[in-house]
Image (cartoon, rainbow, N blue to C red; front, side):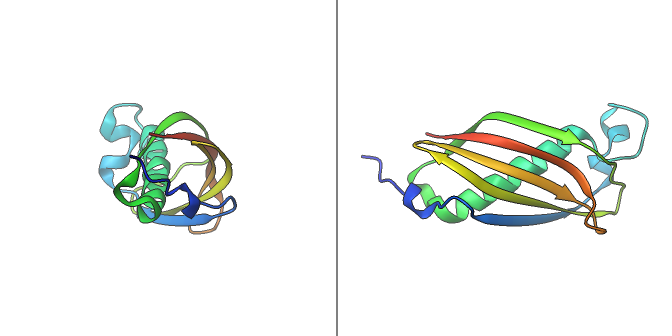
Length: 122
């Protein structure tokens, strides 16, 4: 029987995670482009990893989630060695679906990306 640990989740919860952009995170490394800037797929993975890390702290082994939809707008480049921060916000809970807003900022607190993700509890 599945125990409902969703009670630990409350709309409005916030969580942040930082990373330093590495060479293996760049467009040029993945041959997506020739620029030495953070690749959009890596940016999206960083947002998803931040959300999963947040949920893992709360949910324990009693349930897991899968991503249903991600929408990201990659606004500004980030370069190798740059520290970036992902801020997530649990915007809405609808039974077994979780809706997050996300913003990725650079060290000057300028937006690198903004977006949203919907996750399904399984």
